[in-house]
Amino acid sequence: MQSEITTDYYTIEQPGVAEFKDKGSRFIAYAFPISNTDHFKEQLANIKKEHPKATHHCFAYRLGTDGTVFRVSDDGEPSGSAGRPILGQIDSKSLINVLIIVVRYFGGTLLGVPGLINAYKTSAALVLQVTPFVKKPVMVHYRLQFDYPLMNDIMVTLKRFECLVLKQDNQLFPMLEIAIPKASLTEVMEKLESLQLLEIRKL
Image 1 (cartoon, one colour):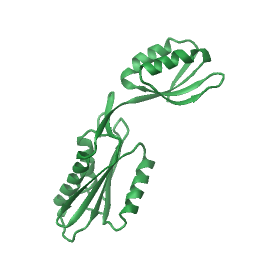
Image 2 (spheres, rainbow, N blue to C red):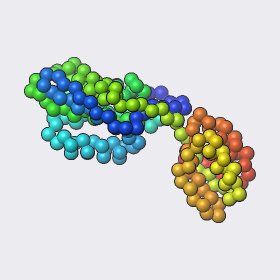
Image 3 (cartoon, rainbow, N blue to C red):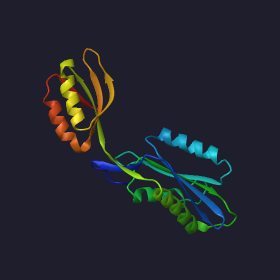
Image 4 (cartoon, helix red, strand yellow):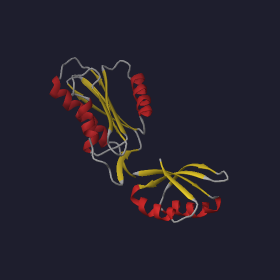
């Protein structure tokens, strides 16, 4: 398990693909940015549809900025020979919200467990070499409810610290759901808490 990330993390924004061959077997590695398990299921279903005759569809992903949500699958390969080596490559780059699926077409020659570990590890490493990484801030989510005259002051603060407005409801007492960069959290909260008639709740 990774330790909790402080203020920034690395991920990918574009899919990538790479191929590795060993003793006739083809290993096609796909990297995808994902934000939740539903997104993962969708990508896996698409790859299985694209490669219905593949022998195995092995994968690993890590989700969430606390690093605790992950899953690995050997999909019929010997235990520990596919999913864990793939996850190892994701973790070696300290990546979050990333899925790698490695599709294998069996070439007729058994590789053995060490050979499989090497093949899946190498395939995952190759796809990460061709997929650019991006640095993103860890965001903390809050809900604000306030008197309408405060709207301008709040929006100025949010813009200054590059906060995101996720949801806005302009009723008699407007409501905002916002994401604050963790690096700026103390300053933003000081500004917001100095305003009267503002309710702040962490989501």
